[in-house]
Length: 190
Image (cartoon, rainbow, N blue to C red; front, side):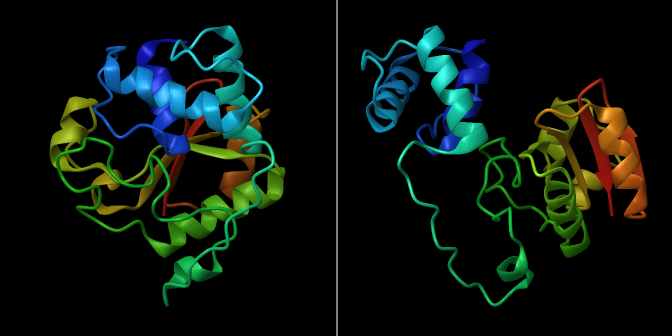
């Protein structure tokens, strides 16, 4: 796993708040140490070797050992009815670190569709991109009219399921547009 991938996982898990820059510096090392300590049963040395990489992947897929699920705070919005996602999860907001994360709000239809995908497959749905600001969209090569800019699109994969299988189900939800990005990831917009 690259340093950038480790930073993304650590951010998703709530241990890293720095830039996703692929540099394994002091912030990344400190985040790894915090994760190692919280996960337990692995050496706390700030080095993300094979054992720590495996633990991070486990924590993303199944949660931290011994941690009870958090009770979701009520917001008075559609988010209260969403079973598997929260607004503050990694890759729901724009990850650029410059725009505040939400130049647009994710649409209710999009998040309900993501919830339906998670429910259908009984496996984690891992977003890789949802809301994007103009600058981040340009940096990742997105088209100028990308539905990510309006919070209407999500790129994601479903743990243990290929994009063809996932896309078949997404099509039953009547998306505005959906396609397989590669063998594992799917784009959908609502």
